[in-house]
Length: 305
Image (cartoon, rainbow, N blue to C red; front, side, top):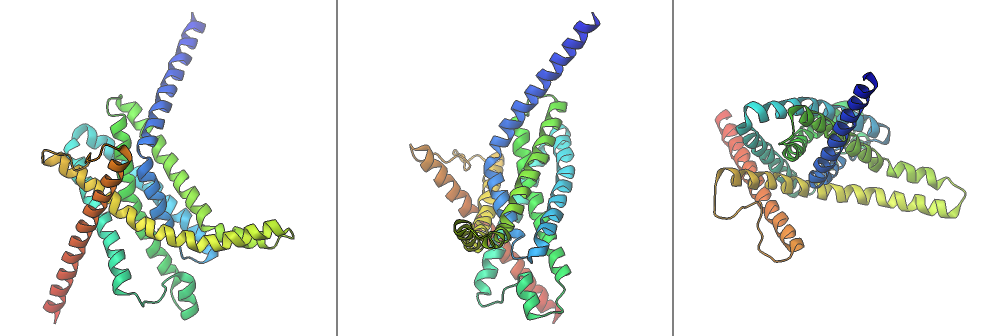
């Protein structure tokens, strides 16, 4: 009798773990698009650092990301139980911030085309007394702020896939997703920022083929970081605009869903047009917020004179 009960318990545990595993896979698959954006944004955020500070900074941001998710997961779970109406406006606020951050980057690049490189290495060359620690802390804070918005989006999307499951299963699945995406994203970020170091190491080899690979990696590293800078900024507009279009659909009925514009018969074309539309909304929203802040700064400056 006892053996039968023990086997039944093991069977229940196995079934539970199997359910959680399936739910987790579905949740991760649903968040794949945002995960790609998360990777691009974070790799761009921690780039242009001194070689000896790259991994410590990635680790600092990863710890901040874990703390973000430690805050987000319980809040999202409780909000889904007691204040489900709060999730959409919070997401829209976060989406607006992403659009603002992307627009600010673009505006800074346009308005300061001839500005000097503000990387740690360049700053150290130009001024040996520059406070690199302060620069590093500011970079980490900015990366953690951006991670918070992206993590919130990922967790809410993951929650939508397990909405009908019992609360305990929801909590376990969201915890698995939160931990999994953090280690996956920042593990890849760490690999990306150390590509140039690997290239330098391979150049010391006596084998011609290995040396050629090292030279290729040294060429690839700056190209990849520049590409990620562009992709990371675009990701802010795409993710932020996507959040806003979903939010508008939640509150306003236009007769057509802004987040599902099926204007073509081809699925790929529809997906591309939807991303372009989300990006356009993100650019317009970001530009509007940047304009408001710029006008407020000018007004405040006049008031101070």
